Image (cartoon, rainbow, N blue to C red; front, side, top):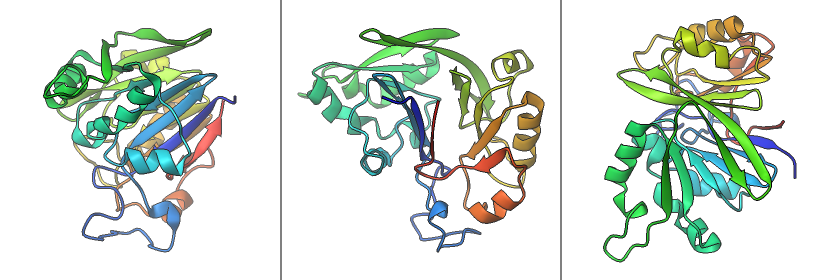
Length: 256
């Protein structure tokens, strides 16, 4: 089985178009402007790993023909990254095993508070998840296969979010600032997948100029911009970018 990374969703918190059918600057005819909420998946040998559980997770799994999940890495506790957690119940029933879920101490605390029925017996519900607090680096294992994951905190406006790095791939979907001490994890990557909300500055996210600057500073071979607001039309944005930087689109994938 090939090692494969897939962008399941690359939209900002309301996706594209919004529920009101507002498209912003996005051209409706371009399917790459149809964006579900931020979420990603990677298959490493026999291990199926999900990053965040967006509100659109069911359709994201079906469209990308994903059949299983062994672990979930959470970037932070916001609803657009977590509210699809209950959709994973069928994988617990299928595997008869709790799904390992990883996140910062604060993220895990909030998950247990908001979605307590996933972590402890309640009103007839059997818990489906086992929580793990991440610190620096850890391993995900399944049978003889294992993968090392590095994690560190980045700023996401008024809170911290967790960035994940593995096999020269980094995922920072919600980020407004990367601490200088953490940039050592991000230099000379094969793939840098990073927040790029809008053209204008935003208190909780990188904008286009900031994302491009960071990509150049870190010397990433390939940078993929995600968490894209309806302000950013795919083709117009792509035309402004250096050759090694590209906008994400739902279903975008690469092998590693």
